[in-house]
Length: 261
Length: 261
Image (cartoon, rainbow over all chains, first blue to last red; front, side, top):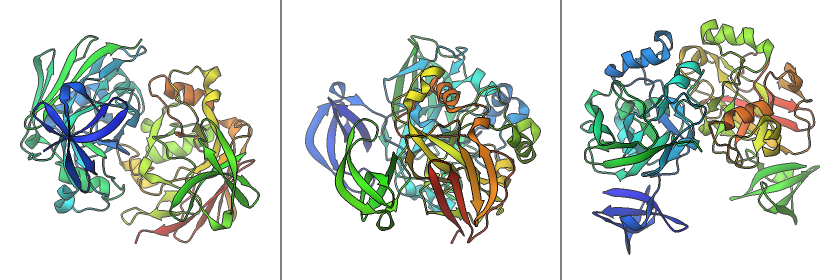
């Protein structure tokens, strides 16, 4: 099932996507809901980020083939290890939805890269959950783009703007509740051309491991978003580019790029 | 004026504190409100964290006399510079209010320290604000405790749990709208004994500088909380301790310490 958050005029609602339509629901996506007879054409509504999370989390370095690249950006001494997930906060202000613009800040070097990632959506309050129980706290999965300004990533003390500048966290288009998160192809296309490809079976820490680890000291709440981490080497996006994160069985998160002002 | 957020039974409201009473308000603390005739004894209600922020921010290193101590915790090579505020996210999950318990996690080394700080409360959407305009975006000030687990602070890649574990962000007891933020004494007492003292005139980056800097790439929202940074050398808190952050002209944020479970 594909659960989407959307806006119709000034009203925000959740619905279930069926082909090119969306059927509005009543109730909570995290507990119980029913599908109503109110239907919209997808073309007539605005898809929003799939939740309104308290926080968004990413692992430090979660694909072996991203290590050399991360080292070249951060310096070897500042590159995280892989013994544990090394979680960090993705800026909450940065969250945008499908078809929204990624804005390259005017004081950026312009070295702003895509990172296509799988995103798990937390369904229940989650505290000190064991690894083998952790997947019960996931509602489903969406596509995410961990947009990264490489100059700031290297020079700043934290990722507050390198990965947290406004618009640097596209997530969408919806939550798919029926996929196996360890068997998905993650593909990024820039202007239609494939530029990044990975498979979630290559995650060093799977979602059960990441969620269990975070929950030992931090309570996760319904709607919180957990990114998978990214793979390989990436390149810069430019104004007027179109970037797509395409994950098998979920859908395509599409965003456009523009310069600030 | 002292503006407090509080709970009366199951209802959450804002009010204005007058001696030992609180008068409920109608409207928004960020735009316009009026004081109603509904009054409570402070002793009869539960003070909550003064806002429900989208995010909480701290500067990397904002007092000269905290530098040597920070270096001893983090290692010299990982200690932030002071040319710019080097903002980082304090875990949103960690926010607690006056009189709430700071919980020492069971897998902590026990080296959990207070850091008494002044906290600015953002009043308006704030994006690319110049330094000289920045103070117009502050509603007032509260007391904060940037609770820090020193072992995790040294060993983890980020502060996600060292300064973001559940309960590690006490803020309160209310927002004082009428103080000069550059002329305040900040005192921490542990079980009644003074253990930390500083003055906000010693902040390397004042709030105007921190807020302007963050707002260049990150939009701040009404209710967002900005910590001042801390001073000097700190010590560990133990279960059954009482810790107070006392800031002249604002009030006293008091919390108790207990071990997890």
